[in-house]
Amino acid sequence: MTIEFRLSELWEPDTRRDPHAFYARVRVAGRPVPQVDPAGNRLWVVARHADVLDGLQHPAIGHEVRKHQAQDLPLAHQRSEAERIAARQLIDLDPPDHTRLRGLVSKAFTARTVARLEPWIADVADRLVARALELGTFDGVADLADPLPVNVIAQLVGVPEEDRARFREWSATIVSAADHDSAATLAFAAYIDELAERRRAVPEDDLLSELVALEAQGDALDRDELVAMVQLLLIAGQETTVDVLVNGIRLLLTHPEQWQDLLADPSLASAVVEETLRFRGPVEIVPPRFTFREIGIAGGTIPAFERVGLSLWGANRDPSVFSDPDVFDIHRSDVHRHIAFGHGIHFCLGASLGRLEARIMFDRIARHLRRLRLAVEPDELDGFRLHRGTLPLRIQ
Image (cartoon, rainbow, N blue to C red; front, side):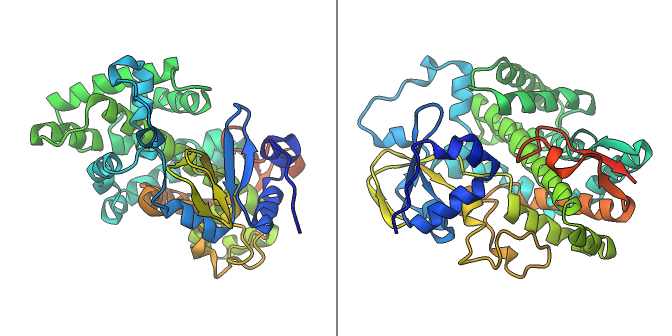
């Protein structure tokens, strides 16, 4: 059976309302499916679990495609400041630069380091839940989900409390910007320059102090790398956790049996986190990668120097891996096979931190917001994903 796809089907309104139906058809098609995004770029979509794993580890698929093409690269000094910073984002680099930069920050996200943050994270979550209980009617994004990760990542990096509102605004603006050359990126860079100077003069117990201290050891990040790294930590460490919290709350409140199970046993909070990651994780398609040569993958062939769209959403609903994949079930035994945080060298650096934050918050919600309800009908919620919108909630 041949399955036909329209050229830009993935971005059509009907598909955006139910992307999983599209990825199911891609899986059945048994081949990479070419799609053209709104900017006119062709993207070969891959959606089966085994094929996505293959693509995430494939030696001929990566980010820095221009290094493999027969053309001159523009000199760094010919790029704008924002373009230089964008070019040094860890998630867009291949080894050896990726290996070097990841190694410099990875110790901040070890299990032992993250575990030390648990009491502080719990205190923030307790205060947010107490405030929500006091309000009675509130926004699940602005009042509950959003403040937790922004405060955690700011604390980890070393951003003073009085600057964290600006920190959050920059994140929202940079994420929504149509291009990297935005005023928010430049303002953020100037702020990090100033904060790094303060840490050079008076180091504190934070990641930024550790990174600038590397200069004395001859293993430093250059200025653009430092700004890019903090920017990535801000966005990836915040936006993804907000997404998990907001979607998890909505899923629980629209699946009453699952919600009651969590209320009866708050230790299921970790299971809620993992099933939310599988069922509706924060990343639909990994940041586009490129083929460095013609490759065979997913039952087909992708030409050299083409974009590859490895769909984590498609992989995490694959019926060959997950039983009843379109059912939200916090008791499932196969949830550990999800790849919502990616796989291979680009596996999410902050996965353990994000899991800890979300687990603590779902635990506190189950213990203290037991009468939590949606303040609107489920079909009134705006959009398929809510982490940049609102989630009206109330205590019944």
